[in-house]
Image 1 (cartoon, rainbow, N blue to C red):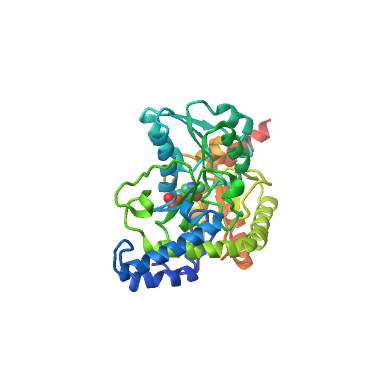
Image 2: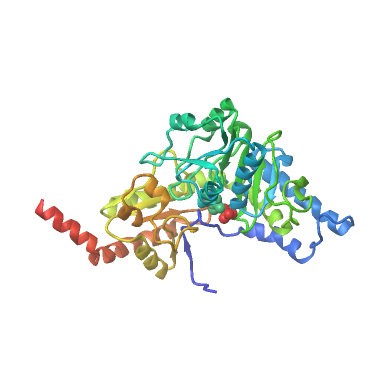
Length: 396
Ligand SMILES: *Cc1c(COP(=O)(O)O)cnc(C)c1O
């Protein structure tokens, strides 16, 4: 593996596993490998640690531990919430969601359309915000579930989840929110939010990949998506991913402890990065609302060049950032989030997301700001799009 110095600005794609989390996990790989469902002590002691971790994850979102189901990832949590609402309301075949959800939602909804369900993908405004009145009007008598993400993984734009939950409650419709991008960045309190379902993914909060959770509010009807053994009180089959569950618990504690750092120091780093790019590199523009935004995310369009070219040159100097979401990288289509915001294809294709985290330092931001302007001017010097624009402005 490549061990050169890494400049990691892609924390919305995944995060470094915290050393404290690694320490918490190792005993469960090396020593305490019993099956938590076994009747003997060697197994039962493991089950106790799962319950400790459940209490910690529940505390992160201010839920009751019995409202927390461990899953394999954020994708499974999202799929499970929608699946449950559909099978517990068999007469209702409509799903209301947005055009800017993570592919974990969009692609599942596309699949459901092929299975005969109806899905409304709400549009967004040019700053990435939602029209709440349109959302309210789009709820139908046959709407089984409303699923709206809390914070967007590409732009960091935050939706007013409390308001949306209240609308859903008044209409008697189940409400799910994909809150995968929020731990450690926003304070999460399901009692305040009033949602029925909420998804998290551990690898977005400094725990390993392959572990997630679905919050299911007390008395919300729930039927499992993964069917098998009676694990998770019959709500999610499959032998528990013990080590990762323990790591998730530790990471949940850390996320509460670092909330302040993320909202002060990390936010200031992000703001300095963004302000400097926008003020020193010409033909750049911020994508997404300035105010209602995660403290760590900046999405910027660099006109006349392809994001893929910028990312390749950043990679050569050890800088990791991304265009769109990691889950869609490699596809030639521009980001569905940016196009839903009305960006032209070329502007969307020239957009880059920088997502910071608690391990980023001021020196790393300096390093990025040292290399980026040179990369952009090199690429623009050879950009055919730039020439076309220059010629056009001369003739008009
Ligand atoms: C990463 C992410 C997911 C998917 O989580 P996985 O654990 O990778 O399946 C879902 N929603 C959002 C907003 C994400 O950022």
